[in-house]
Length: 543
Image (tube, rainbow, N blue to C red):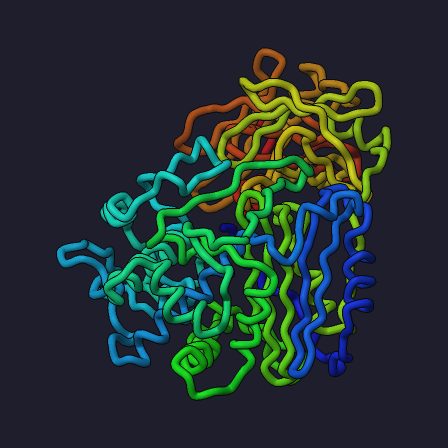
């Protein structure tokens, strides 16, 4: 249940052309054939008078993995369905978007406020509640293969006591699965039934979504097997029923086609009125309806939501003006490799690029050599990269070594678990990397020298010594001590620096870098201190 990705769209676009099954199959094969993830996808383009469908796999020999009777986890697309249930309750006069979240929770539940400003339901459906991404209690984050399985309503509500809002609700977009689970629970509670029954009565049955469910799988439905982007099977995710409106719905392609058709229809039924209400703008930064992202394409507005669990990806796009929609369901998590946006974009608007498969490739020898070293990943984890026999090996601190594969998009990925390592070349020609896993993007900073970098001698280190004023009342003193460079800021303790390249030193534990400058004669005369996105500059005062 990863954060939804707002699909990038161009500012001008031509009307989409009618689609048929053969053309759709050709486009999906073009995007998917031979992809190193091994993903399978069920895809539909829904038009006013016609629906095109196709079932495709990166490896055609795997075609039996999916089909019309197979249900996929739709992840965060479930949030749009919870929004429909909320809108339905509002249409019945049982609430308002301006109700406080607290008023929909059990009496006595302490919901955090910011300087007297409460969280409203409109803040929850636009991800502006200020609540954190995940609850502090009830989740086993050491087991990210099924992280929500043990979470219940008691832990969900108790976690509110651990939250202090840092800004006013409604003032900032911060995607929160926690807030969405609270809404899921609150909607079921206000309706007086469990969420699965509510979905069946108020959404699935009216739209003919006969095979959609949370935990009560209908007869004749087969659950798709979940896969990571490394191509191997991973566990499916499970949610407590009343919390599943944040990401626990399962559905077949036919179910999702009917959901899109319901979203495009203009009728006067309860479900139609509720769906129309979810599409109306509720906030502008970014533009959102009720749990729908609103993306501009030319003069049109598209409604978009992407979802993912540990082993599935999904995407739904609605184009109300053209009465057209797109559904993509995949039995593989594609978050670390960019999600389903490129394919969905192209199907919604043909002028946008389709993208191409990621195929296995051989990493350049010079890239392997440049990456070798020890790194600190944002958040504190340390990793080492080593090269042997033309391959890259990753070893997180205290864990076994893992062989990394490489693809033609220029990324490495472990063969044994779902993650991605993206090399980042810096302006000085050295490399660091971004680590992507479980929806997080973490920057890794090298500590220790490059494999091809000769460490400076004590005499060379002494040439950097001096005092560097960086701000009024704040300076950095640098000295050579025991064959290492040591730095000390005003009023703080001294810390050692590691030489990693010519005129560049790092303190990985502090996520800090020093870049030294030289004058026309080659003498050190200045430095830049880089930390947490800030850069402070100072001229050297000789000691």
